[in-house]
Length: 126
Image 1: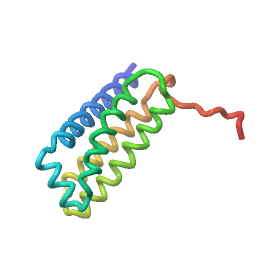
Image 2: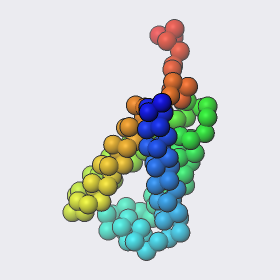
Image 3: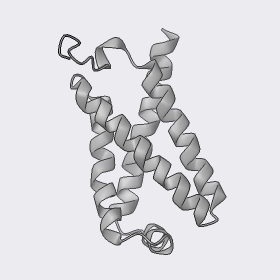
């Protein structure tokens, strides 16, 4: 039971953070626009991430679609590793640490997910 609670809390926090980030990115928040420009990323990436983050959050929350959940976990992992590197190289250590915390939270969600939310590829195919 504790494992299920940990899963839902960690996954819920991730989903909430992703929806908040998407709103920030898509609304043209000056800090987000400036941050992407300062780190040398095009504004199109801000828009793409603003669209993909809530879609990934939905994929983690809805029942079924275990393969899609794996892709969402992978996408968030890649995005946050890139965020860690970008913020670290831009001398924004607190923002890099926030991305590390988000990555740890994602890991907790991944390892505590219920069996019905795991993708099991067909093992009979070589």
